[in-house]
Amino acid sequence: MKIKCVITDDEPLARKGLREYIEKIDILELQGECKNVIELNNLMQHTKVDLLFLDIEMPYLSGLDFLANLESPPLTIITSAYEKYALKSYEFHVSDYLLKPFSFARFMKAIHNIQSIMEKAGMKIDSRSYVFVRSDKQFKKIVFDHILFVESLENYIIIHTVSSREITGIPLRQFGEILPQNSFIQVHRSYIVNIHKIEAVAGNQLKVGGKMIPIGRNQREDIMNTLNEYIISRKKE
Image (tube, rainbow, N blue to C red):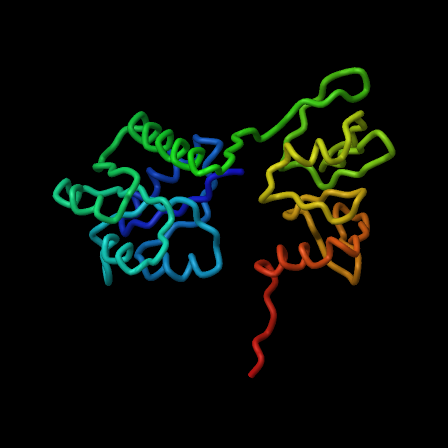
C-alpha cells in the first residue's frame, strides 16, 4: 500500500514545495491540499488519510488546536516556520517537526521515520509501481496504473492493460497479492479489476476497458462497499 497524505498550509508556496517533495517519493500518495483546518476536516470526512503535513499558525484554528480536537488523529508531521511550538507539539504525539524552510534530505528523514512507525504497527508498505512478468519469451514491464483488469485462464492469467494483453503463467491469487490493495479488487473468481478503470456498473456486471466483467455473488457486497465512496446520488428532500 501507499501512504495517503494531505497537506494543510495557508501559504501557497509552502504547499507547492511540499507537493513537489511528495511527488518525488513513490510510497507517498497525495490525497489533497487544504488552506486551513476547516477544509482539512471536511476532506477527512470522506477521504482516508494516513499522514498529515500540518502547519500551525493558520486562520480560524491552529494546527495544534485541530489535533487537540481529534480523538484518533492520523500520523502527523508538523511543518512550521516557528521553532517555539516544537516542544508543545509533541504533547500531541506528532511524528516529526519540520522547521521551514527544510531541505529534501530532512524531509526524507521524516518519511523514513513514518515508514518505521507504520511497519512496527504491522502496516505493509509497498513502494513498487510496476513488475516484470514473463510473456512471449521475454520479461515485460507491467505498470500497475496501466492495468485495466486481470483475467484467469486455467493455469495462466491475461493481464489487460491500456495498450496490450500479456499472457503469463502465474496464478491469479499470486499475482493479486502483489497488486496495490487500494487500487485493485477481485470481483469474480476469474477477474481482478483496477478500481480506477471501472467505466460503469450495470446489474451484476462491471464495464472495464470496454469489456463487461461478471461480479461474483460472494464479491458483490465488498465491491459496492468499495465503490460507495465514489458514488454521488441526489439527496432526498
